Image 1 (cartoon, rainbow over the protein chains, first blue to last red):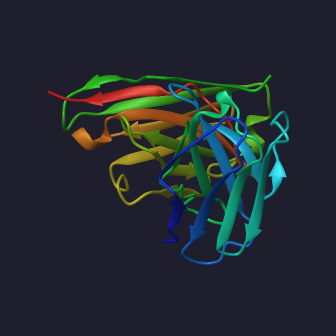
Image 2: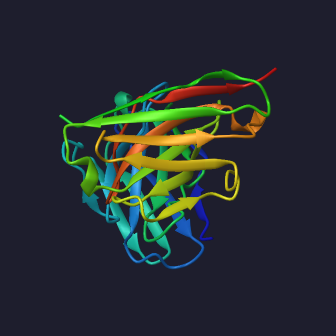
Length: 107
Length: 116
């Protein structure tokens, strides 16, 4: 099975900072990559699919890039409501494996 | 409005069984594959099972294969997860999720606690 590895596992940044999370697949997955946000105590929410397509209703400060094995989620200007754990997920074929998550906090 | 509502969670003894249901509404259920994803307390998301739109194709993570069975009843717009031979490490919140480009809709989750 393809493994998904995120880095860092956690980060702390100030409001207004640019934040970057990376996700690496152990084999190529084209652009079949999704990103999710899970706020504390809440259900996961799809942010981005096809590596770079923003889901409807998601703020434009979120963006995604990459293809093949290396992917990036960027928050251009961190806001207090962005405190959450972020997960990548491959969906080119079963199993639809998630990365281990990146916890984002406000400094 | 798309809604997914899980039910059937609870406390079960090790070795026991439980069936989760996920009632879908607001979309053509029979047109979408569906997934079960779980999250152990304080841990990350784990994809455990998926089923095609017509139920012909299923997938199980190795951790549940042979113990869990996914199924669906398109006439009732309902997804199921039959869980057997439950272990402590199966304790988690279980989410059903619609398969699209990613999982675009999720239920609120059902807590399953395996303990004596």
